[in-house]
Structure formats: structure tokens, C-alpha cells
Length: 164
Length: 408
Image (cartoon, rainbow over all chains, first blue to last red):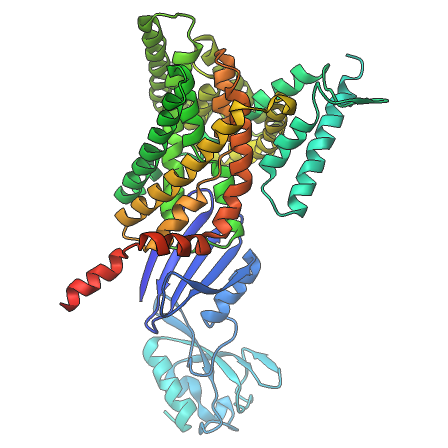
């Protein structure tokens, strides 16, 4: 991937992005906050074939969608946030995981992995912040866990196989 | 004098109406402001209370137009940064030099071949050399061409032209506005002008920390007053030593651009620039009597338009080639910066102040009107125009040639 930045005096900043797919995208960030995205022709990299204009707020939202921050595509297993050695991970509970239907106490998460479950959001929309040992891991729920890297690894094992 | 406010109000209302019409027609506003100014004036009529002759208020409108020039150039100086120019790269420097070289030479040739004296020739060359950055930048954004490969080159050439404009006006104002008629006296006043500019820039650069402190003013009102005070004082003082006041304003802008307050000043100045700028175009139109637009001025303007078109396309193709852009992108360069506007009028006004021949003003008016209207249209139609030119000239694509060589 090749990204080139150049300044357009009086207009804004221009980024030219040549992606691995052979696509050329040009993003213009106007001084007034507007964003323009241009997509260029494969055959003739000088001819733009489509463009989109977004305002500042829309651009930020689209950026977070592309970055997988607000809506998580299925392929993206987890989003990481780190502070020092601690990592906060989001896990999506796939239907075939052995832990589905078991409670946190049953899995003995803290003993077996050292990690701590800090929240569970179920598909139905029920949210548990700092869930107790009685809370059941359900299909398609998102489990938010804090712990060090190897503790996270062990937790993932428990989630998938039902034991550490 | 008792109806002064009413007359000025009428003028502003006319300008506003012209602006509304131009946005309705999706045209650049500049020619409309000039046209509405030409439509009224001393030759116009008086309808009951509405005096379209603007005789009483003419000096005031004229003065507001002058303020418009100050704001235009002050803003230009504020936006300009030496660092940006250096960063903009060698290809742009080459492109800018090519553009100015070709168009300036053609302008000089036009003046000499039609038998003008040297001062008039220099003014005419100035009028035909410098593009309207306002129109060019707007057209780029409106036509969604900012993403194109040639955009950096276009904006770079415009920046280069700004530098040329500053230097050229200062030399020319020394020549045209000086009291002396001898060559030595003229050279001396041109030297004084250049010396003054350098002094302001050097002292200004040294004084940046001091200026930062002085302008640290919380109240917007006082801040604005201090800025306007400095602007008008320096610009007015420049004029007393035969440096065009426009250049004084530009210098203030250049110096303040280096301070930490540049952005705040910019926000403060833009509405004033737009308002007084509109009055500047209007007052230029007001000074032109459409009934006098006959004969030589028209032919001269048409010749200049043709030369400018040739010079622009030619310079654009060459400049594009130096930056190894495709012929199509290169054609866009010349056709985007063909519009002429504010700077050509400033040049013409300089000629008027210096008491040059009367033909300069109507010539500039017709020339600017044609190119301010045609420029954006040519930019829009650059593709068919390029295809037409390509049939005749068969441009070689520098990028394709490389591939051919590689394949052999």
C-alpha cells in the first residue's frame, strides 16, 4: 500500500492511496472540514470514476466503520486496547464454542486463566457489567475481558473448549 | 451629501443582486460585479429617488474599493508561506517559471507591437500575465478536480504567480508612480521601494516574538482594531514613498503570517475581504463608461485574449511535461488558470494612478470580463478541447514513451 500526502494551498490536504487491489483512492480533507473521496479508473489512473462528499461528522463515523470500531465485522476476532501489560479484549461467542450455556462460575474463569470478565453483552441486548459467577455465556454474546496477554490466551481456550 | 447612506445602500443592493444572479446561473461572481458597476454610473439615469449615477457617493465607493484591494492583498500575504513554497518542489518552480515566462513575454510583445510606450507595455503585460487565484481555486473545487494529478501543479503555479505579482507591482509602482521623469530618478524610486519591502520583511521576521506578545489580546474588538490599525498605517505609509499601498498591505500580511495569531487574523479578515472585495469590482465597473468601449480597446483586448489562450495552453503543456503528467492532465493546467480577475484590475488601476494612457482601463475591463466568464467554461470543457488539440498536435505522452523504451 502506497500513501502520498500533499498540501493543496487554500483548499486542504490531499492523500493519494494506491491499495494492493490496484485501486486508487484519493481523499481530500478540505479546510472547511468536508471530506471528498475519489475513486479512480483501473485502466486510466488519471480519470476519477466516482466520488463521495462527507461532512466532518459523517467522515468520522465512516472512518470508525472502516476501522471496525463501531461495527465489528465477523472476521475481526477482537479489538484490543492496551494499557501497560493489561489488555482489554472483546470476544464474540461463536455458536460452536464449548462454553455456550455454561456459567462463569462453572468455567472457573479466574482460577483457570487469571483473566477477569468485566462485561457481557448478549445478542438479545441484556448487558451485565461486572457479571457474577451465575451469569451464563450465551450464543453470539460479546464478552469483554481484562487481563495480561497470556491470561487472555488461556481465557480464549476456555471459551472455545470449555476448559483451560 | 444628505442621501449618502441611501446611495451606498443602493450600490450594495445592486452588488448583492448581481451576486444572487451569478449564483443562480452558477457563474463566477467577479464579472457580474463588474458588469453591474458598468451598467450604472454617470451615464445612467435618475429614477425619482433612486440615483443610479452614484455621483455623490462615487468617491466613497471608490475608497471602499481601495480598502478591498488592501484586504485582498493582506489576505494573500497571510496565506502565503515561504516554507510551503520551498516544500512545493522543483517541478512546480519550473512550471511556474515557464508559465510566467511565456505569458509575460507574449504580453510584452503585444504592447510593443501595437506601439505602446514602455510604461503602458509593462502594465499591459502585467494585466495579461497574472491569473485570478480566486476563480481558479473555486473552479477546481466546484468541478471536483481537486483529486486530479495536475492539481498540485496548478496551485503551485498560482503561488508562484503571487510572488511574481508582489515583486512586479513593487517595481512597476516605483516606475509608474515616481515623480521624476529621468531614468536615474525612476531607478532610485524603484530601489527605495524594494529596499522598503526587504526592510519590512527582515524587521518583521526578527520581531515575530515581540508581535506575538503584542497581539495576545483577549478581546476580539481590540484585537481587530490593532490589526486594522497596523494594516492601514503600513499600507498608507507605503504610498507616501511611492510603493503601491497594495504592496504595503501584502507586506503586513507576510509578516503577520509568521506569528502565532495568523489563523485568528484570517478568520477576522475574511468577511471584510469578501465585502470590500465585491465593492472593489463594482467600483472598477463604475469607473468604466460602457459607451466609451469602442474601437481600439476592444481589438486590443481580443488580441490579448487570443494570446493568453495560446500562452496558457502552451505553458500548461510544457509545465505538465516537466512534471511528467499526461498530456490530458497538462492541458487541464493551462485551461484552469486562464481566468483573469482581481490582479489584472489592480494592475490597471496602477496605470490609472500613474496617469498612463486612458485606453488601459477599458482594455483591462473587456479583457477581464471575457476571461473571467470564459475561464471557468474552458476549464469545464477541457476534455473536448484537449481532444481537438490532440488531433492537430498529436501530443506525446511522456509516461508511455518510458514504457516503450522498457519493452525494447
